[in-house]
Amino acid sequence: MGYGIDIALEVDITRDLATTARPSQTLAEAIVRRLSGTLFHDPNYGYDLIQAIGAGFQGAISSTIIQRTAVEVEKEERVRAAVVTDTSQGSDDIRMGIRVIPEAGPLFDLTLTIDRVAGVISAEEIIPVRTAFNGGPA
Image 1 (cartoon, rainbow, N blue to C red):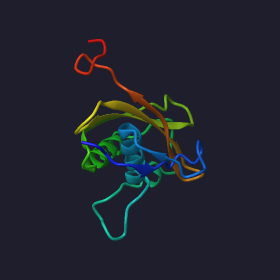
Image 2 (image 1 turned 90 degrees about the vertical axis):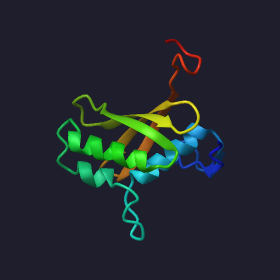
Image 3 (image 1 turned 135 degrees about the horizontal axis):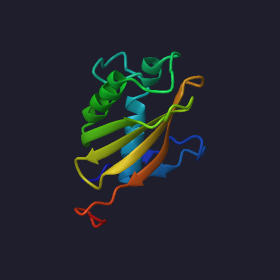
Image 4 (image 1 turned 45 degrees about the vertical axis):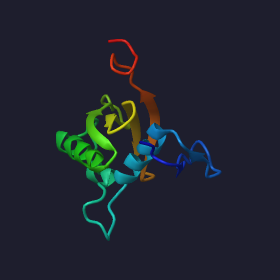
């Protein structure tokens, strides 16, 4: 199952509206859009992660926010499951790791950086996960 072609939204990397056909890249961008807010015409779509974290960030993301993030990522029809972790490690930088298990294709780890001041969520890294099932080490 292919994911089609999407416009690459990594404005910090490419400003020329480049397209991408990499399934993990396309899915990662859909996840970032889902976590960037809700749609007024579809109350079941989206989660405003920046608003949820808020100005009171104290070096750790709450378990409630981690759980709601995983639920929202799993609403994406191309995602079978997601495991979300706080990778901020007590710093002022807000980082979140998401292991994405897609319905089709290899699983991958997505690292998000959340900038509360600018109101931006960025996909910092997309790393394929090698397992015994997809040709990597056991």
